[in-house]
Image 1 (cartoon, rainbow, N blue to C red):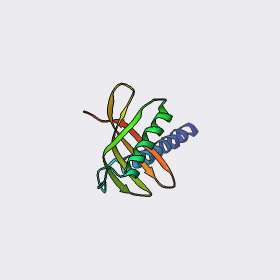
Image 2: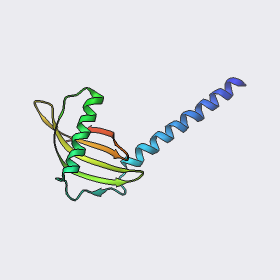
Image 3: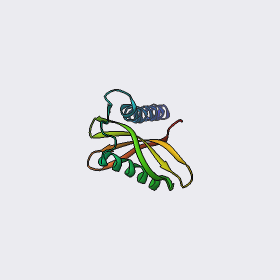
Image 4: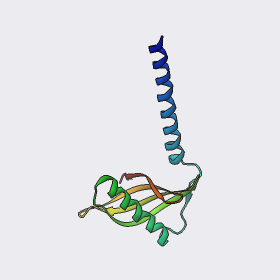
Length: 117
């Protein structure tokens, strides 16, 4: 009986953690409430792109060099999310990436993924 209760509790805990994780991820990535950034060349927006590349390099050990943000959206939800399409070079090739940054008291890189061509 104790084993059955442990399995039941473990299952509930696992489902709870999974649901919490997915709500956070889907809440950021769904398409509702994102607003286009009007002035993509703004120094502040370009700086967020540079910070995203810096944070990605720090986490991954990569040596990407920020080039520019060429498209982006924002969303306000417990801070401001910035979804930025940017270019970065690896020393040889310039590639496109999408970064999602959360700005509350500081910047937090949520995701950094290559864009399809």
